Image (cartoon, rainbow, N blue to C red; front, side, top):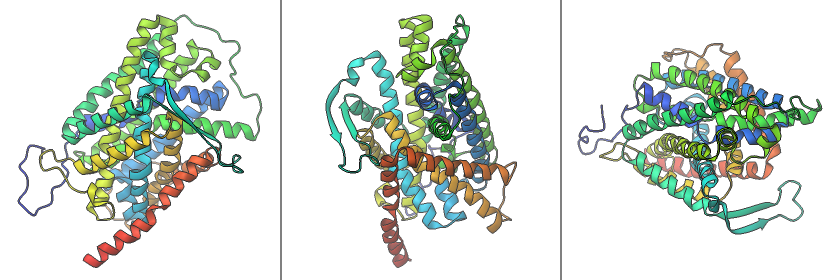
Length: 474
């Protein structure tokens, strides 16, 4: 079935169509993962980890956690190939309330923070070429008297970067509004360009004359509680760079042959990206001193500039901008399916319901998502938005895999074309890692995290209201 088919007869509900083949599926996984994170997070990981060993440990553990999550999600996606991903799994495995809470979090906090941070990262790349983008227009200092130990003072700086990020968000929402097949084709093209740019940085760095940085802190200076905190902070940054492998599950009802394409795209995509990330980090540390990596705003550009000059860095930065656009495209493409699925089930704002009669996309959900994401992009920096995203979403990544355990018990006869290898150890370790990560982020960023938690819980009164309306109309 394709988007060119005629609209169904009057009164019949329009549905999403399976237009995403194996290449588009893999491009969504790889294209969302490889975006702004790999170009920006190595600096934050160096600052947080404070040693080369901790940085690489964070990359490796993050890869293992992501692969364990992908193996678990591959079973869920192949067995329940429905729009909304975790929304469908939690509803069926744990209960409708948990499914709703995921969908509410994703639609109100998680996806807006994710897409806004990708846009903010892309604009930061542009600032390497046009420094005036980062010129402050106005600033605001916010502090809560008597609570500064818990809620650190916040300095909000508004620059031209924020409205430019909104422009990007509007354009990419429009691309996905006019068709999932077109959006998938755009994703394949942009994924190729971004992988090429990452491999270019790796090649330039590895072919450059070797530089010995004798002052680099290769090993931690002390082995105590601070070491664990540093590792978990670096791991949180790494997991943002790895994030995106689960986005394919959100468009489950639009993936062709999901029993085959889910496992291949998820597991293969995560493994390939993990290798690329380790090589990229090694390449950066080979060229630049550890301290310079930790203090850099444009690590990849500075690596190429150091080896090949400013002209080459300009071309690379343009490729990085394209990389950010690719991640933004896949984030927007997959994200709108959750509010659509919830509105279809009458447990969300009705404005997000409906399939476009010509393009067969959740057009109204895309507009709803675009408005919230644009507002989110005006509220914080790349690092602040990613911290909010990690805390809010990893709670539900863990719960989604808990639903895998529940479904194995409650529906043992459910057709499972793919089963998670290493069950129950592999999904169990993933749940443990997700729990440890969310607790760590809560303690390290209590202000943003508690705001995110409050926004999640705010959905419960709405859920009760919508549930009553559904009950009275059935």
